[in-house]
Length: 324
Image 1: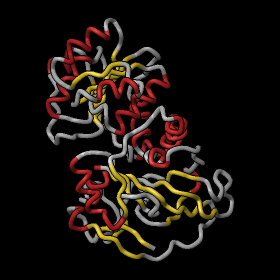
Image 2: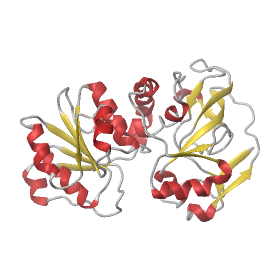
Image 3: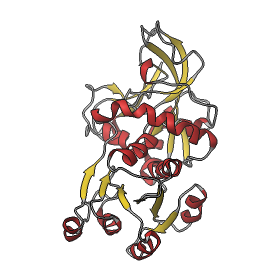
């Protein structure tokens, strides 16, 4: 069967290759065989291929997320059946036509847009867990985030709305303001220092217990003044690659806490499935939608990586059922 693997850890444009590998065989007790159909391509995948997160010895198949159909089930499997669409467990080296996975972390997906359901693996759980793990948020509380148009940003908007939490989302392009408001965002502002005064006016006497940063650099400085006393700043990415700009006087005077989030941490393993189950109906109904820039077949993986580096949500067509 076909798979995408790296010959060594390094620049994905140099080490990624399409190869033939042995079939996985039949699923054992408590396992399922998944025919993989689609796989998101994320910046995390590129970092993995560069060796930032460890991994098995190379050469190795790669891929952190996958979506497909159950082709066979092993003994004792009752939570999914043959024909169900499922999201493969995260970090299970998904860029292959078929894989064996534990059934324990799977659930049958509702009917819906496959391109959207394929993105349930990491972005919605990241958003959901940041909303629940770092602050005791109550309905009516505010959360402020930058990169509001990202997969995590749109997931946070939809899940927060479901939970009764209000959102302020900062974006870099003005045409996104009305688009994100239509997607459920309460407030959308341009990501610039002038947004601070407008956001403070809107929040009024409300509470901002959580700020979510995906950008780093000077963009972080716009989030910090909006936090209430003893608020939490959580970083899950660093689009700029620059150190976060945090005003030390605000950090001290407001008793703020700064933490980092990584979905792959052991502490989150058992919490991912419930968040995916929570988000699946939002995706199926269209309440949570992340625009897809392009879908690439496996032989064009390097073109897909180059596109991702320019921006946009990219999916890999593992099964060969979508046009590039």
